[in-house]
Length: 302
Image 1 (cartoon, rainbow, N blue to C red):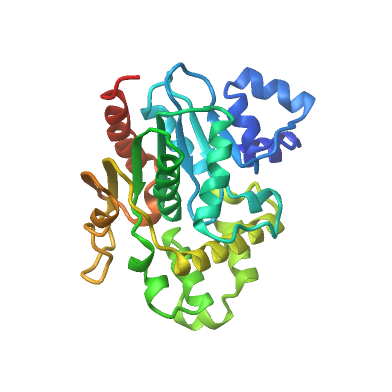
Image 2 (cartoon, rainbow, N blue to C red):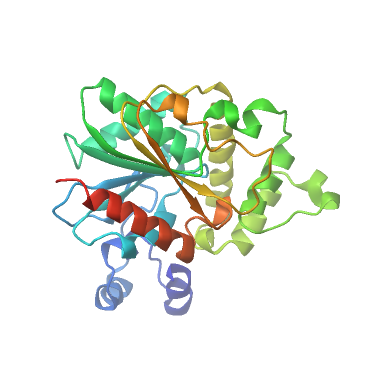
């Protein structure tokens, strides 16, 4: 939508402008006055209004948070939603030394809109690991964490990247496959970060409104996050957690759905979703996930 508006009307709106101005009247006004909001803020308000405790959605490996907007229509309008984005998106080269450092940084962002608990956190892919770490850190800080949702994520040692030596071009090919873009074996040797960014920029709608150098920064962020995975070992969260597992493309060699049990001192409620890992925030799967999350959140007293 943003790409089409900017191309057709010769304007320069950002994805943040869309979330802050979600009606056609507001957007039409912005095309005259110009967009001003940074789409790479660490705290991205997807829906800042509502009288219930907010749901914080932590970015997947590439670092951006706007795919979580797919949850908005299935989570009640009385609940604010915020995405947490990688700090390196706005400041290239600024990267945390560990998942734990990243979690502490994101907690400060969360506290800027919700100073105290109970907190509700969610994360997809790499974001699920950070979400679990955020929940553990919040409890260590004496805060209540009422809701944790992990979307198709497994503890660090369960990841293929953490146990098997994978070359960078092979890892990039796997990531493109998550976006439905298959890399032929003959093209694998030439798949470096620049080529990956070109493919993403030309074929993945979710990032087409970005400049090519910004897409390249997404790639650098992802590679750094994969490196963090190799060093990461989760703590233990004291409470229950909701685990969504993408079932399409799973094999016997895939990480076990039971692998989180040892890191959650409570019940891990497991929900299968008939999609691939990269499709979880597509409209159909996201609607299913959103309905389950909404029911779980609403069953708790505010």
